[in-house]
Length: 202
Length: 204
Ligand SMILES: [Zn+2]
Ligand SMILES: [Zn+2]
Image (cartoon, rainbow over all chains, first blue to last red; front, side, top):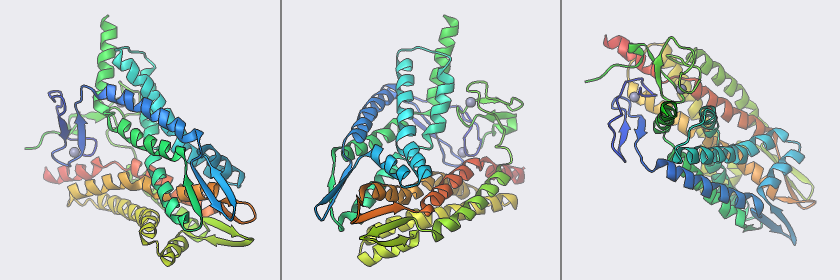
């Protein structure tokens, strides 16, 4: 492989389990060999999707002041932005924090399940490309920091109650990062190549 | 001892699947992505996107990012105004988070990318490794500027007590989201390998 940052050539075929390779010239991360990578990926994807469902289905935060109360859920947040005359913002927020990360996890779950069962289908190649393109636009962790900032920002104005979905989304953002971290580009594509080769041979 | 680069052997490394393929091919034989020895027109494209981001940065700071309607008295606030308000309220840590994410990160990113483009176009070959680190940092921190846009979105949805207290989203939120998106694409169009190409030319 060539270093993505400086193009220097490396032979990383002899890497043992758990070993990590970095570029000696520019320091960029190259790859890490992990035999249980796909099992981990699959578990993080399942757990992440369950927490996202919890994150969307229940009240996220509620706000009480002078006897009045307003309750917010994640889907409602998108609808609210849309209704306040900002469909552009509603679309961006929905895409970055719910739609894209959810699609990434669903596709990673399907792909990792196929790989664990040693199956190869031609559609896995374009689907993987799609996952890598979408993954860089997910902003789950940034959104969760935004939630914490909002809490402090309005905490003094009134009573803010944290709902079940708050914890669900918090868990989702951690699991999403774990899932992406266990997805190694080089190892993934090498495995896909190997499965494709097996299929052609058989 | 340093080995060869892929380019020196006329091999192009796929940016998506990392496969090495003959540089005369137009698409990666493994994943089908467009294949280039170096990203095409990397400098021009990055510069054009940076200028776009700078233009968007003006409405993002001048227009209100959110509008607070408390008992009928309407109060628009800008990004910087929001930071000042937080300092007045004594929430220094949150003011710092918003200031770093909304002011320092996007400005730092613009300056860093302009500097990288300038240093490459001038053919400088010093601090090569540091410049690669700067590049990777701009790639990494880019999306964190979205924090303020998300904060506004949450406040709009949460603080919705009709007649008493309502928070509305301002146009700057969209402009600012635009700045973040355009700078992310600008960082993506920059090819860090061109920083090293020049060093090799001078080494020879
Ligand atoms: Zn390197
Ligand atoms: Zn490829």
